[in-house]
Length: 512
Image 1: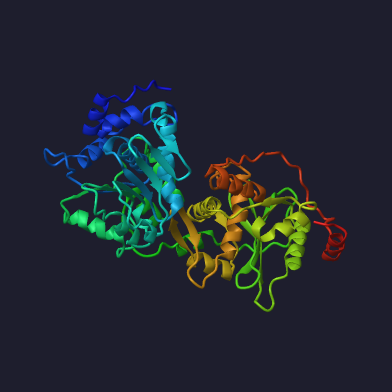
Image 2: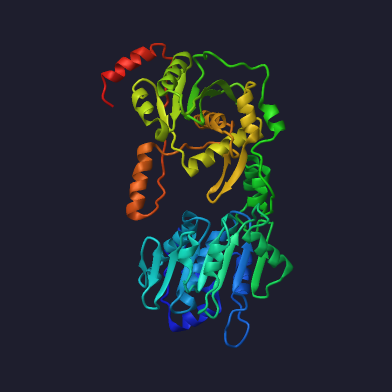
């Protein structure tokens, strides 16, 4: 841990003149060392914090920075928030906002941790869940929700907007950037490009390009500027991301319209017309079964697949669709019987269910078959989407012709969210077959660390997810690392699993 000098009056004067000196002495990173700013970051910060006259008023009160992903945008914004809280003015009001509160808390939490690593700064603050107070200067730093009406009347000295492309409208922006009291409030925006050319971000982007606003600092780069962004990393991202998503995230380019998940050519390359659905498996092959449950409008889809050691490809072996209606929903007992039938016919090493949908089924069947819980969270869906795209985009999966699955795959979009991207269907469409295949293929890939796809870890178990929810309510968000214990298994097809009738008898005699 670096020894940090007290902030004297002379130091504070120096900090007010140069934000870069403040950050490189006071912003502490995870390794206990002060941040070392890149040259482009120093230039941006010193340009933004220029003064225009002897009174010391800002030259700019609005800064829009468009920089590709992984180039330190969030750290830069966190540094600005720290500076504005401690070294700008007394009675400072600094706010972190974004399209949703979780996104806004990213920069807030980075700033909070930087303070907690700095004993000099930590002694002068009071830290709460969504607020940091500096009692000696009566300054505050808060996270705001995206509910614009609650933001009117605030007297912001600095507003940090993260990923403005995800802002649903301009209400929050207008509410926070029109302070009638502050002489020189600063609005600091970090983002990468969007898709909607009628959005607030695009309006500001056009203003920046055309230099319409003399009080606006505009910096937009389509190049990766940070020394740590390597060509190897970018090539990996090209392999894993749809073209439009890659261009937005890593080239900071505007991409209009919707992004198709995969192309017809990619699907055709992975569809083998010589393959047929299998009714039984080979004993030496490890199979993975996944179920995406929909009882009425959505369909329930059961998928079985495996990874071949001979050619390192993932193969779709079996798929079954259950379609219910409001008056005649899919029966859980029918799905459970299909699961048991597959376990009798294939060497199923894992049966993958969503515990929110199929908690009862998992509890009933886990004494008979190996059950893996897959909780649908933003993180797990993102990993499922990336893995499925990687397999199709790189020709590492083979499916037999299946009309519903093929139509569904071609209708899916790569939808951008605040936490990343995921597959999603259009209004009125479906994604059940794709999600079921995505779940099964992800486990087929992650169980063997060879070259088919990339290693990913599924979602938390249901109990782990509920424990995290309780902890977040008490202590705020905390990342829980879920480590999967890998045990070498020796499993052969189970031909003695109960029939549906036997299962019903078992249910009656057990209290679950």
